[in-house]
Length: 226
Image (cartoon, rainbow, N blue to C red; front, side):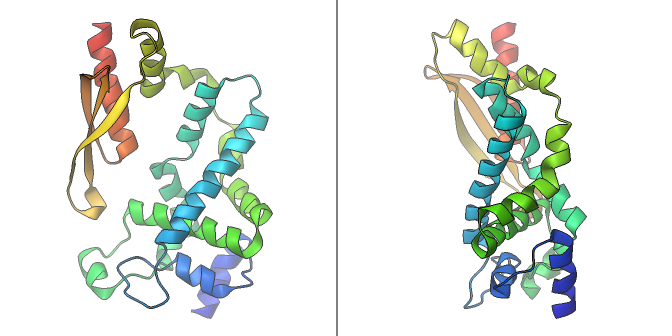
């Protein structure tokens, strides 16, 4: 296992001073061990990732407004992209899960990979500080950020609905509310509604809350623009 972890740390470019942080980042909640699991690190890593990506696009794209920056960040840092980055790093090979969980899910789900990558970012931050976390994050996302197509940001359904609400609903803010959450962990489906001024305008379903909200916004736009 030491050799395997050495390979991973070489791949991510951060030799851990405290290897226990790396082990914790790769410990799925299904493992009932005294040392804990990666959920707290995932919470921390999510915040660090958002900060670094937000700061980078703020500097790289000085001419786009706050709403476009928010949509750009969402297009760069989403569940699918995080899972893909985790696959590139082969994090699933090192992820520790319980035998019972592995029996039902031999391969890590995208949600598990996404959480593990964010936990890894949290671990790097605690082990080496913000600059170490920044180097790792930009190693993963610098090319994506540089190649981002900012011309299509206004086409984001949630962004379009937000802009439309300013004109037609006297500045009312779209409110997204969860309705149902169904299916197993590896194939979870979320249904969300969107309302303005207490009026439901649409519903959407997707494999993540963000995807469901986007579909709800599309439904609302179709109703408003009909």
